[in-house]
Length: 425
Image (cartoon, rainbow, N blue to C red):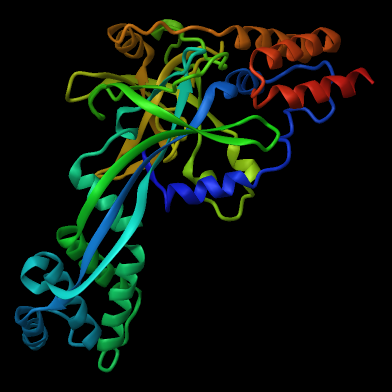
């Protein structure tokens, strides 16, 4: 599920402040049984990245001016109250006016003479994962590129949020002489003014930028540009997209499995960057650089109205984790997170998830003539993890050092090197 961001640049600034090293899974490594999720996260997380789809434009808006029809609504509201069709208190009458106007803002609000222009960024956050050491990445189709209607909603929700709040404040101040503004009235006013700006707003010089946030585990942050190579259709279609970062080499990658690697009842593991982490103002920037892993049982295989098979799992699916890889217990990708469970009101629940099967991902990669590869970096690093978790710290240390030589910006190997040295001491 795609998730909007307040501004792509704000996140970049927040990440740039990271100066310390993320701790490893074990504070004091020693031979012991290792949980499946712990081992899986350590091996696969280096290939999972946070991606941004950002849009920059000059937003042109005109102040909303009430029409004669809007002013006449207050008299109509009073007649509705006298007829007993709505409550007689003034707050209820104002709320009726707002509901009525929102249904046809073109009739009730007209563009004024005052013009405001601002260069603004809007966009969304998702998750992607490397499948080749030279920079090919898989994510969800709905994470990259949006239709015009969705794009306008993004700018209204993000770029014009302050403008809408200002309009609401002016309106509630005006009606406060005869009606007490409350939470319901404020919410209705927000919807009316958002509907107005959605219709009246103009976007000039629109540009799109796909990017990936990279870090090396020491606080150094880089933002790499991504190019869209191939794209399917959004859920309920084949929600798949292929991206490419130029100039990459030695990247950590994941291993693709098969659909029949998992059966109903097996546990699945989802890796991604949920918005509850990336957009949480109470978490420090360092902790936002690393993906989260959630798990849950594979419930059933379903087919969408477009004839596309999807796996339904009882694993939490958060906004921002869309496009993230879904693993079986052996650590191989069996699908990609696309959406939560659809509710009757059009929203999504987070306690269930729909997963695009890996067979469709493989077919899409084949059509693009891209062969997924487990990079040498990942093979050496994974072998080092096997030694590390088994308590063979000297062997692990040697392999971790080799992995860092193969990919100096590896975000996890530095912490494991430090832990292995500590264990040897």
